[in-house]
Amino acid sequence: MHWNDRGIILSIHKFDEQGAVVRVLTEHHGLHAGVDKYALSSRKRGMYQPGNLVEVEWKARLPEHLGTFRTELVEPLAAFVLDDIVKLSALQSGCNLLEQLLVERDPHTDVYDEFLGFLRVIRFEPDCLPAYVRFEFNLLRLLGFGLDLSSCAATGTRTDLTYISPRSGRAVSREAGEPWAEKLFRYPQFLRVEAQETAVSHEEILDGMRLCGYFLEHRAFSGKGGNLPRSRERLFQRCMQRLMPEEKPREQIVEYLG
Picture 1 (cartoon, helix red, strand yellow):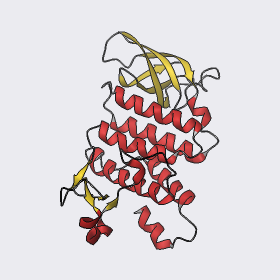
Picture 2: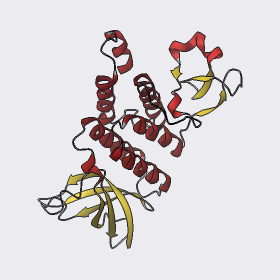
Picture 3: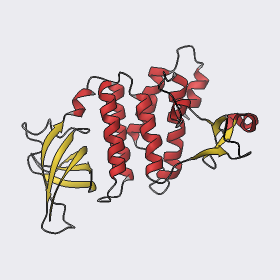
Picture 4: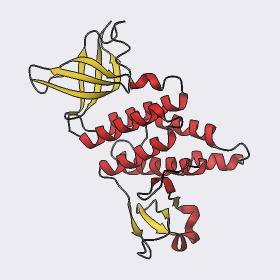
């Protein structure tokens, strides 16, 4: 068995003194693992950083075997986030989400394209958080857990959709949702299809993180123990530390952390 593809390094786990099991999100072969006997050598260690884009060749005697990898670096995308703790946290969270949610060897070209697009955006954007929230929001849709935001769940109107119901995953208009506002998620403007390229506020990013985190945990991860990766929890805490204005009362910070 043999194939060649492009892929994004998601994780690397030591196998022996110089070898490692590498997990890659490939363009046409989905989430795939393989062994590189020299992955931890001084010559290759830098290439096998989560987030790097590589050309990968996989070989195995039988399809069900783990097989071996040979890789060549295409874009060292990880190198552009190492000096920014929030970008590095976002990269780790994205890699862990994909590794835990995707079915091994099940092609997901759309998910590959979405994640690669996110990595290329944060390479140049000073603030990665809006792009990260969009990635999670789109990931829910691509994996079949998307929200129904076309009309208000209560009235059917398609205008002034301000909230999202945690129970149904449907949009709610401002008028219908205001009596229940404390129990609903706010619908961030920057996640809307018609959203313009404008500055994203601190509050909107936090709203987006809470919204996506809830539906990832209660839908995407419901059959996988129901717990988000710890890297995702750390990213949210860093968002709080970086974005929450200092004058916010402590009780509101506790509320955001759940």
